[in-house]
Image 1 (cartoon, rainbow, N blue to C red):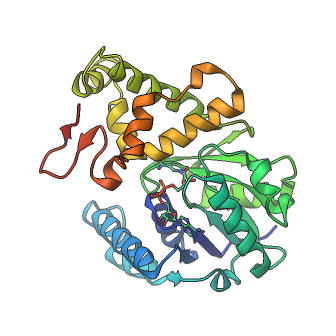
Image 2: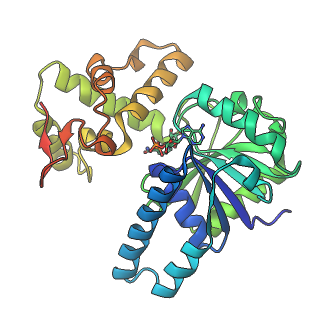
Image 3: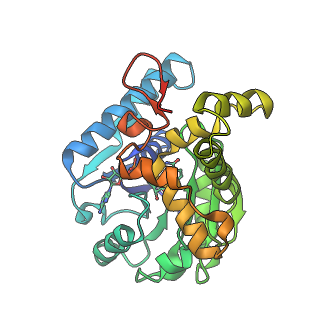
Length: 292
Ligand code: NAD
């Protein structure tokens, strides 16, 4: 079985930087790619900050932080990813974006390099078909924030071979994560259950049943959720939430997955949650303030 040593990460957003973070700490050489050098540099600054927090909390040593950071290389083009044993795509949740990435990426990789996607909801089998190696392709679905969350969902496409699956499972366990295997149906397990709840919370707001504050307080204190559903939606990114609901709605053809029009409105406004400083809460001040 192949031993993964060099990992490519495409997309250096909130998930991509977390994936690069845990891979580098686990001793892998990491090649981090995004649309521009500036985006990758800003991701490196985020990783540095997050690792520094881990040092302060006593989770890693200063030595480990320095070594891990030294293992992350800026990859401005796909050509740089050529030595990788595994490439994890974690770009925006848009099928066309991902297809374009695989079209550009696959021709520069070794034939035995494994390719994975961190998609939250798009069919692994369909994405695999957009590559030249469906048998060496699968879903590795990390949770947000990657360095903190214990779970990784592993999803095989129809063609994924056993060696790929076993190599990726070992790689994931070596990262210190616990694996849950999900079948390739829209949104897999966690988001199939979580996103309809978030969407329902947005409907609850839309229909005036409660304010942002009332809804989040109700679920935190009434159901013991560590974060309220609207706070969580802002954390995930409202564009990501909307695209997952759309994939559930289209993929399962059931009206119960209809995205709430208010969620659509927030995304159209560019109020995407924490990453744009505004969503169901406004994060520009000292304390988050509900926007409704
Ligand atoms: P994000 O918006 O924070 O980051 C996406 C990054 O992809 C951006 O930096 C963008 O510049 C980059 N990108 C876009 N097109 C690209 C291209 N052609 N080449 C290289 N980079 C490109 O989004 P995110 O939250 O990090 O989500 C990334 C993936 O992870 C999505 O598939 C999402 O569904 C999945 N995911 C998200 C969460 C979550 O909670 N946000 C959890 C699990 C999985």
